[in-house]
Length: 262
Image 1: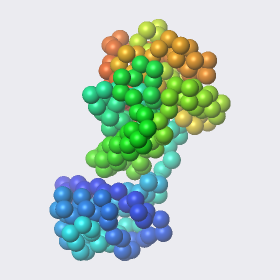
Image 2: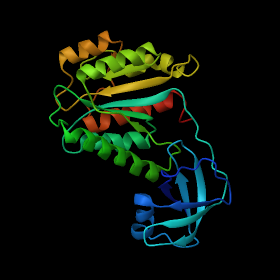
Image 3: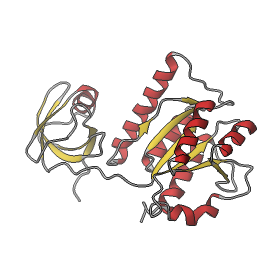
Image 4: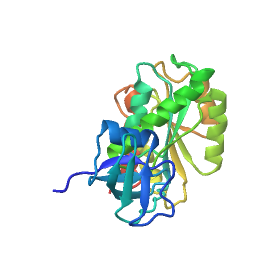
C-alpha cells in the first residue's frame, strides 16, 4: 500500500494556472512547517490544497531551511462545489469546546463557520479579541483540512453578536437556505425533516445551516428572534450534548441525508 502523502496548503500563490511539471515554492508558515517541523526532504511527495479547493500531488526537488521547491506531478484537480453547502453557527464556549467543534466540523465537511457571541456566552470576544479569535479559528480550520485531506477550506465569517446573527439568518432564509437551531427542549426531532433535507439539492437549496448555542443554552428571546427570522428549532437527539459535540453530530447527520456519505 502506497504511503499517504503529507498535506500542505498552497495559499500564496495558489495553484491556478499550474500544470503537471510546473514548479511551485512552498513558503511562509506552510513551507516553514514542512521543512523544519515535518522535515520533508528531497524526493518525498506531498499533497497541495489551495483555498479554491484545487489539489495536486507534488514532489520535492529541493529543500531549504524554511521552504520547499516542488514540481507538480499532475494537473491540479479543480475544486468541487457541493450543494447544499453545510454551515455551522457556533456560539463561543469556554474550555476550548468551540474550537473542538470547529475542528470536528471541518473534518466532517462543514463549508462555512460563523462565530456567535451569544447572550449567555461566558467567553466573549471584544476589541482585539475579535480579530484574534477569528484568526485562531481559521488556523484550526486549516490544520483540520490538512489532517483530513479535504479538497476545500471552510470560510470563517466575522464574529456576530445576536442582533447581527438575526439579520444574517433572515438573509440566508430569504436566499433559500434552511436554518436549523438545535435546542434541547424542542419536541420536533431533526429527522422529522429528513425528507426535506434529502431533497434539498434537487430543490435548489444553497445551504443548510446549524445553530449551536453556548453552555448556558440559547436565551428564550434569542430563540424567539431566530424563529421569527425563519429558523426552525429542532431536537438533535435524546441526549443533551456539549457545545463541542452538538454541531459536529448534526453535521454528520446532514452529510448522510444530503448524500455526501454515499
